[in-house]
Length: 192
Image (cartoon, rainbow, N blue to C red; front, top):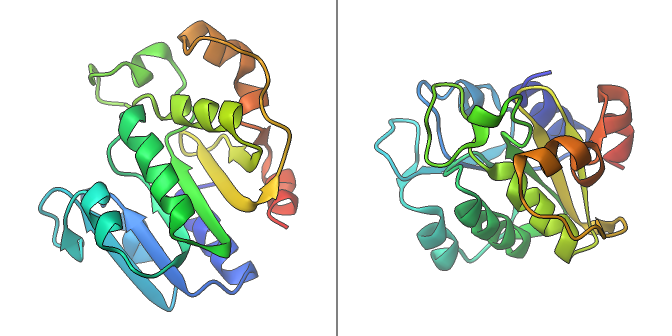
């Protein structure tokens, strides 16, 4: 299951109107595949598909309206992803969805910051762990496409109570729990 399929499924099933993409990769394959009535994109780099070349922090600082779906795939350093998640929670509609990409690295090298290899997720998973430890906000993760984690601000689940360090060993041991990993059929059911 790839990003556009998941995003378009959620947009269609929930009749969502306003879509924001943070971070446009290369030829914007994801961006171009999204079917939403209103789409907006930002990227800090010069990309012809980015509607605005701006950092996500600056964009949110200037924002004065909400979105129904926000896709976070910009800076893959957890300190920035933490801010992108928090800012998104402030500007997502009440029944909206936030989707973080690259939450399930398959090997330790994929999550080392700074980047050391081509296939890279960054340490995005740490942001999901921090969110789950500090909040009862609902998250669910589809393991495909290097991890697609949905966040819903108006749906709750018990906090992740284990006080664990953010190490690769703990990620491997506890990821199913704090990421709430599901197969596609369970993932679809969890969206309601």
